[in-house]
Every structure is written in C-alpha cells, then in structure tokens.
Image 1 (cartoon, one colour):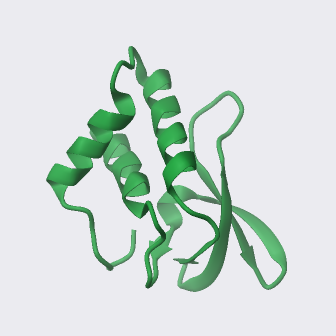
Image 2 (tube, rainbow, N blue to C red):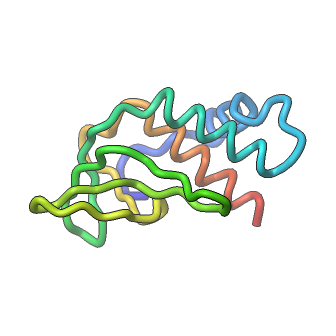
Length: 110
C-alpha cells in the first residue's frame, strides 16, 4: 500500500482475529475477510495504481480461486486491479484497515 498512515500491528492482529474467528481452514478465512471488507470498506474511494489516480467502485472475488480485485474506473474505463496494487491517497477510505489486515494475513500465509 501507499506511504500514508498504516494500521499498527496490534490493530492488524485484532482485525485478523475478528475476521477469522471460528474458521476451520484457509477458504473459510478468506470468506471471513470478504465479509468484513464488504461490510466495512466504503466505496467509492480514491486510490492510486501505478501512480495514476483511480476511483475504486467495488470489489470482486474470483469464482473458484484466490485473489481479490478492486473494480477501478479511470477516464470512463473500468479496470480490475489486484488489491495489492492499490496505494492509499488522502483521505483513506473508511474501513481501509480491513484491506490492510487482509494483506497482512496473506503475507503470514506465506
């Protein structure tokens, strides 16, 4: 993510715990994150992708598979961008820390 405010590690850990409570496997954990992100991240919001400003209008989860896509618009065109490519701009979107928690969880899954 961008160089803006980051969520502190203790908060990330708490969010990961909240998203994955009662999950038995990795697929259920992904579903937990999907629910939390859909419920808490407010779209649309501004972000950057490869240095260009975009508007994130929604999120898409691939059918059968892993990954997490941001639905972005720029100059009237729609793009699906991997969530790891987003950089925060000011102001950060409401609920952005859920995306950061998901990304931290991905790193820990290794």
